[in-house]
Length: 74
View 1 (cartoon, one colour):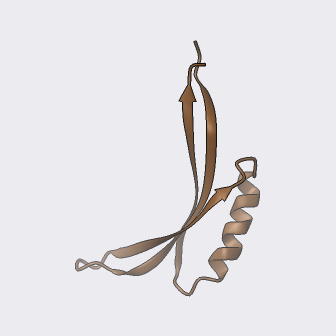
View 2 (spheres, rainbow, N blue to C red):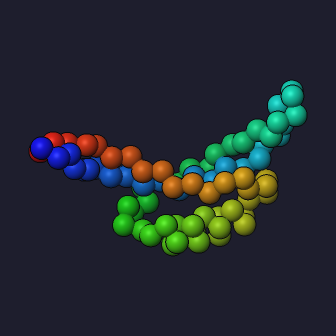
């Protein structure tokens, strides 16, 4: 029986530079925006991420889409 996805949740995450390590590597902090409509397109979510990134005081390293789902054989 094939598995299907249920209970999908989507989050937008923006990684911002947050200092450096003892060895000089960049450290990042993540700004998370949860409960995003899972139907949103990648293009629309990226556009929103760019708008939020523009308001950050720290340099933005990455804009990410994270999805979590339950798999079921029902």
